[in-house]
Amino acid sequence: MDVLYFAWVRERIGIPREAVETKASTVMDLVDELRGREERYAAAFADISALRVAVDQQLTDFDTPLAGAREVAFFPPMTGG
Image 1: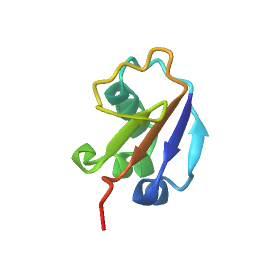
Image 2: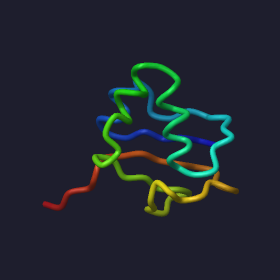
Image 3: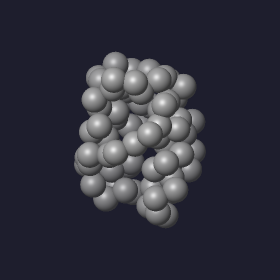
Image 4: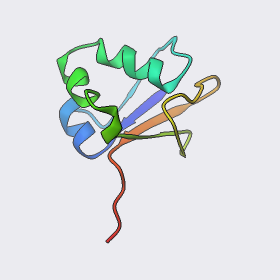
């Protein structure tokens, strides 16, 4: 699946997107897998309360199942202005 990173998440990880082979069943499982990769991922996902997630371009929660998902995107909360 494609995993996309936006704003400061992208800055901490150092790439805007990557193809990820995963056995994760939920978004949170994917986050746990990514955290375990190396320090830059651990830093990016240290506080998931500061993150939002979209699965196949639909805003969702971290307990969302990933079965059949093609894309997961992580980004900070959107602000108006």
